[in-house]
Structure formats: structure tokens, C-alpha cells
Image (cartoon, rainbow, N blue to C red; front, side, top):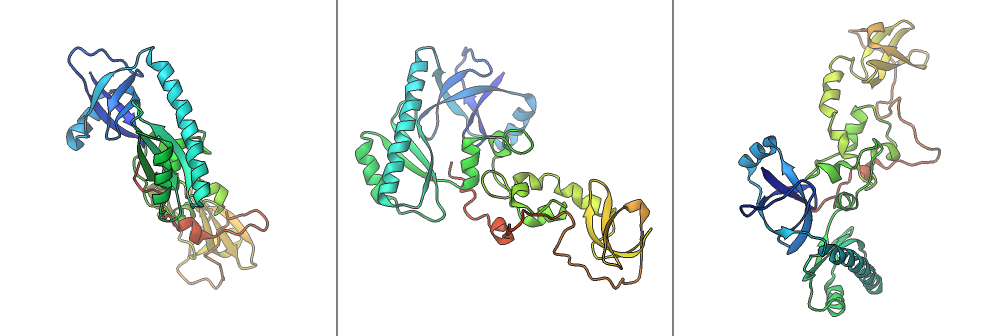
Length: 306
């Protein structure tokens, strides 16, 4: 039976286990990583993952030992020290007037190294801050890591509008490019609250079903095409993929919805003006301004520096 641990950012690594070691799923173990000695939970690796690993061969991490009852007070004390270190560092950041947001602080189990994760809109010159931290935390290696806002959410965790834990906390290893076109093509209201996550960036899941919507679009008349409806000639204004229906603008200016089975495509051009930048499903709170450019800007969303 193979075992693995999941380190930060959903990266699974097989364990190097000595012969005769007795492990079980969910057990806490001490592992040596690039940061030092860290504690993780053990996962049983199924046969499909083992086949995948034969191809990609992730780095195996050496098992030091299992965590016992005597270690539990040490882990509790470590959590308290991490909280204290967080607020000490935050105070020093404010003292130096640095534009950076401290996200989390982590000690290695042997407390020889402490890592501060932070987000920042631009590169930060933290040389003076590092000197302050060196004076504050003596005989400890200090690591300041710049991460993105999507990385921040994956570390802190939470639940999305679907009711599930965030994808970035469960299985996403790297973030794919996301833009507002994905939302518009799927007929999703262009409202920030509908299409962005707690990180403030576009939902990663906009990518998941996009190919299905592209296939569904092939069965519906294109936006801007002329159609004959039960109420006369019209031009397609918007598509509702899930209902397999279309919104059209009639000659009298009214917008109506019809099933695709109730309309017929016309070969000739229809002289009805529509604004294709709008969507029949679009709506915003009164006075709300939607800056699509800012939503499409994914700069510093993920640094891969976790």
C-alpha cells in the first residue's frame, strides 16, 4: 500500500517509508520538506493515482516519524507562536509603511524556520523589514514569500457559492487563465458578485463547463441573426443555453424569449438594431459600475511561490 501527504497548495508527494512502518489514513506524520520538518496528514494512494505518478514522478518525501501524544502540546504551542509572530510582523510592516498584506505565518516543527506569506500589488523592498524580523526572531531562518490573491484564498480556505470548499483548496494545483468572455458566452450576469470569488478575481469554475456551452451554441441561432417567431420577424439578442431558448428583439423594440423549436432562421438580413455588448440576463445593483477591464486583469493573482 502506498501513502502520500498533501502539502500546501494541493501538491501530493509520495512518502519514503522504512520497511515495517505502520501507517493509516489520516494519521499525522513528521516529514522532511524543502522548508524543514513539517507535519502533515497521511493519505492512502489509490491505483489510479499510482499510475499517474509513474508518468509524472513527483518527488518522494522522507518520513521522519509519526506524531504521538507527546507531540500534541508542542503543536498547540506552535500554533500560538505562529499567531504571535503574525501580529509582530504585521506591526513591523505598518511601522515601515510597506504596502503589503500579511496572510499567514508558519513555523517548521523544529522551529528553525518561519515563513511569512504576504500579498502585494507590486514588488516590495522589505530589506529593512527583514532586519527588524531578524532582531525579533533570533536563531530562526526567516522566509518572506510573496503570493497572489488566489494563492491567499487557497491557503485560508472557505466555501464557494456552490456550497463546496473552494476548488483551489481541494484539487487545483495551478490557475488557468480566466476572463469575462467566458462568463458572457455562458450567459452569466456580468455582476461582480456573481462571477468573482472571495479572492476578488473571476471564478476559476468559469472554465469548467465552457466547452459544453460552445457545443450548445452550435444548436442555437447566432446572436445578431434574423429569425421568424410566432410574433413576427426578430433578431437574436441573447442565448439561454440551459433552457435552449433565445432572447430576440422584435420590430416593435420588445425583447421576448422563445424556445429554439418555436423559431426559424431567416436567410435575409433583418433591419433591427441591437446592442451586442449587452446581455438580456445582465443586471446590476442600481448605481453599480462594472469595470470589466479590472475583472479581466489577473496580474499577481498567483505567483506559484507557495
